[in-house]
Length: 188
Figure 1: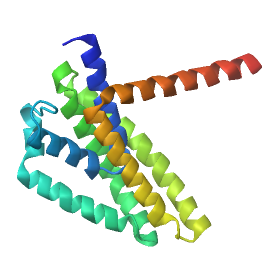
Figure 2 (figure 1 turned 30 degrees about the vertical axis):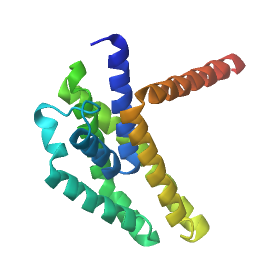
Figure 3 (figure 1 turned 60 degrees about the vertical axis):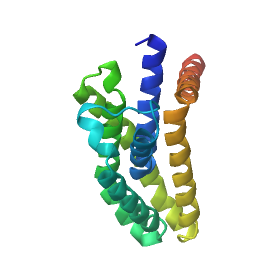
Figure 4 (figure 1 turned 120 degrees about the horizontal axis):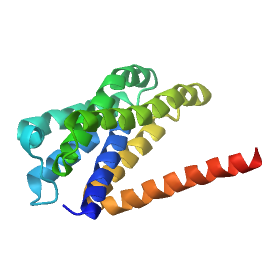
């Protein structure tokens, strides 16, 4: 495997894990359907083959429907976020480990990376949601939730179909963070 392919594989893993921080079931469903319905785009191997079984796809579709509905109701969405505090990082761990198997990252290291990425995204989302609910009286919850689901879907699809765009985005974000740190140091 080439270095470029390894970076693209990591981009897929990071993108899917970040997407899981917004909605656990969308990226899981994307990789399951991609593996099941396409030839060569996604190749889940070894212990991850079960993800693309029709039973798993059916359960993921049902859980996605429940998540979408629960996340649109102002009081229920806070309870859902508490439940998803465990589910989303776990989904991130599964996604990272399943998509980096080809580049031989140790499964425990991959799972930890997935937990950290999905957990960080979920924490940012979950801590901002109550503020939004209070300031808008819950009126903005369905709109913000729909936008979150759309973003999760786009990131998931890009991570699988165009990981070079995810890689470019990661490089851009890291560059901006390093530039801001450098700028602050110079001012101090």
